[in-house]
Length: 326
Image 1 (tube, rainbow, N blue to C red):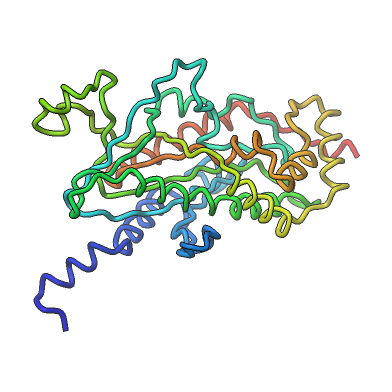
Image 2 (cartoon, one colour):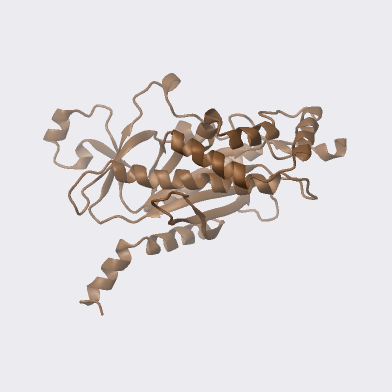
């Protein structure tokens, strides 16, 4: 028995279960379906499943037309009522920024009969706030924790290779239904309000501030980075070496057919598979470095923005009956 009627509320709100349910409901309302607990991080110290894989097909909202697959890879973190997440803007000028346009919503067309523009999803980063070094403030302990948010992002990062494996395996064999391009976007959803510090922040402004709004702006969502380290490279190489399944002849024929059809080609699908198995860092960096952090109340806004970017990408895509060339 709980001590009083308020205890059950406190315990429920302290868990992620209610937030996970509400996030799933929001995804369904936006026209996606959800799969639960399909992926784990593979971390020895944290085997908790990533709770939600939101699945849809472009153009989102039109079930009669399917031109691409969409997977929103979502982890949920319920924090205390007083917690605030503060991030700091990227200080680099655009030409020297570590952020890469078009890699937060990853568009992968190399395994499909379609070709997307090389900048198909760049507008997402161009309109989003780019910020890192997230710190949780005002939690019950009273501490400021910079490690906590990184821990959440690390779990999301280490689970992503499983999702990419599933997507590639589904497209790497000859099929009656030609494989579609796919979009992947990892999202960390929290109930905590999100803030981005002013670019003019200083020790003096912090000392003189009375509230966090004096030094930072509240935002609905932001794009952040988590760099690729050697441990993650080894994790990826093991995942792809053990679990990628593909038909090499099909992949080489697909690339040849796309070239004959005059379609834009990036890296050959067979080369991508080999680079994944080898843990090639530049490729891993493009797939697994950038993430969206979103406050739950603003999740519908984020989903609308993602829909817009993907719809625009598919409006410009090129698809030809390359199978007829054989």
